[in-house]
Length: 136
Image 1 (cartoon, rainbow, N blue to C red):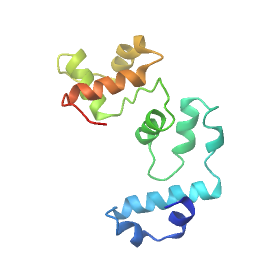
Image 2: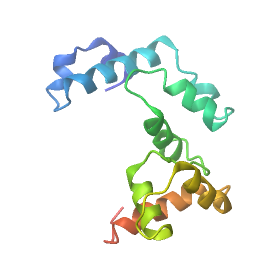
Image 3: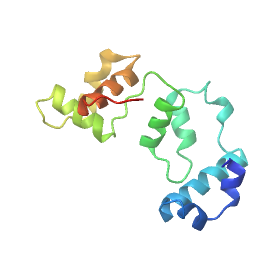
């Protein structure tokens, strides 16, 4: 389904696909942002990570974590450290702090040597929590 079709549908139709009422509203808002040209998609490759985060979080339902996942998995940005990600928090406390919680400052300091490839480190941290082989 393309953006125009999503923007022109209704919440009930989206909900019939198993999406919650709230998420269907978010999807409609996202589609409307694309349709209206409110998202600067053509400039994302020229913007730094924080600028892209600012751009995409103007969409209802898109917060910092979602924007960071977008940077990692869609824009393939190499140096994203999603400190709000519960998996990263868990992996860092298990591997670097004897199981005790770490502050964002402590996690940032620990990840500093990983620059400019923190996204790669994040992938390894996620995998460390689920060591079962994954067939991509």
